[in-house]
Image 1 (cartoon, rainbow, N blue to C red):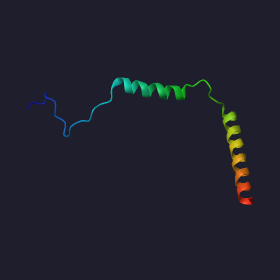
Image 2: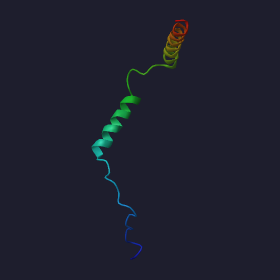
Image 3: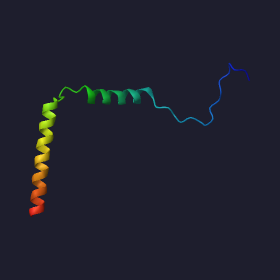
Image 4: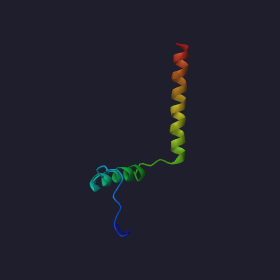
Length: 65
């Protein structure tokens, strides 16, 4: 065996995903990142505040009830 010959793999390789499957995953990731309804940091902070207040009200009501 010379150094120009490829080395056989030590273990059998699994089936590689098809290119169309990889392309579909890439489209999903791109859609998540490049979506048109991206919110500003201020809007995200306000939404988080609204969720926090609602959660605290629920906890207070459950504790009191």
